[in-house]
Length: 158
Ligand SMILES: [Zn+2]
Image 1: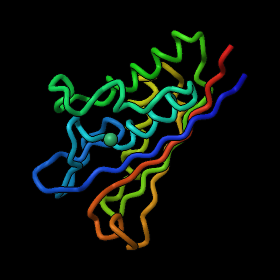
Image 2: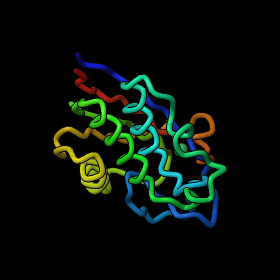
Image 3: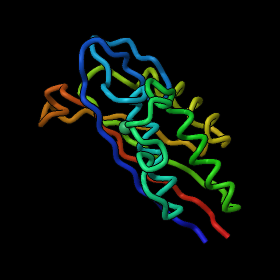
């Protein structure tokens, strides 16, 4: 049976942090604030996969109060989500995500993000969709105060 899951994440954009999205270190004047590397894209995909399993979000499995996850590369979280799918004898059909960021231009980095995410999930790159859009200068994203990501995941479960 095919299960769908949805994920959403947002992190504040601040000075003095690296901007990591989809595991790619993107040159920018600001980066995302968070306990881990604050990779909103990977976090949203993670929550989509966990949602397809009916599990709680990644904060449940990786609390932001745990020093082990301080500065952690978020691929660790994706690998755990994929492991949970495997533990249920499930198969990831595809994941699809949209990053909402006013700046910087993300299109040049999309392919590298797909490669990283496919590798962390042990799926083919063709099973990973990633798009980026701006927020047309509206709201907190438009004012470049934060970056959001949303994702869906399709998982075939026995
Ligand atoms: Zn997050």
